[in-house]
Image 1: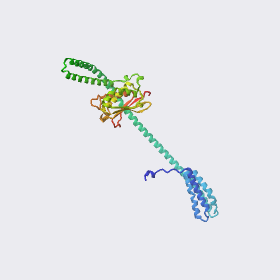
Image 2: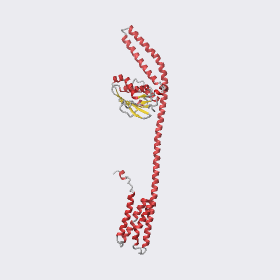
Image 3: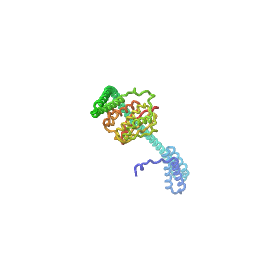
Image 4: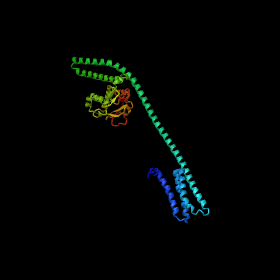
Length: 391
């Protein structure tokens, strides 16, 4: 048998049952007293002592008052019987002492019971205070842990923001300095390609291929510089507060429409719930489109061919919205997971490492955040929070 079943607390006897037990025991002893022949002296001596049982019980259950009242009741019912044989030698002395002892035992038992109950009550109250203090300390400890964790997270965000701001300024200057000569190189190569095509048809195949390589690499470098400039945008690019309002569902529709051809070529399926995403957040539509575009492109590049990308509303409150973009690709390698939102960190070959950095910066600029769901095992899952338009 389990120990818990043996130590199960006993239910207290109800008040009415206690009164019934005390009264019943007094009546039982009294009936036997009056029903048994007086010549059976030994039996009557036992019955006289049996009155102590209900008196003690009354003192234990009801305190001094209960013990006294039980002794009084016993005296009343026992007194007529005590009159018989009162004239016997010393009989009245013994019976008087017996009646006196009823009151002494009743009062003493009640006094001890009252003190015991008082002590138990004080101990119970002290235990409750101790448990309450312990609970308060545990809650305070948990609150301190949460506050400490939040402070560390805020410090990390500040350090990341400082790094991003410094790198953003450097990137902006570098991108502008490179873009000007890059445009001149591209224009010159296009002119040279046209001249070679007209002047020497026979060598056009080999030369034209080389020129196309130069043009493709120039365009790729231009796209990288565009990403640099996107990343280098500062808070002043947020625009008017009235324009910082976008509907997630409507913006996602426009974003998917831009990616329609790429989705068709890669065989990647997009899924989302229009009704769930009919939510307005405090971010401009262009910035929200850029965030969704980068997240979806990141998932598509990770998947390769086939697969699914899902956009879900995780939670919503009056102050913020939690949005998730998840895929069934290979996931984020553990060695780059902690720094995946830092610039130039990428888990893909040939990746610039700026797409997710731009997403993180735009989210932070608008009072939101983004992180990786480390518990998601079916691919990669990015969870982003943004303030609602009404917050």
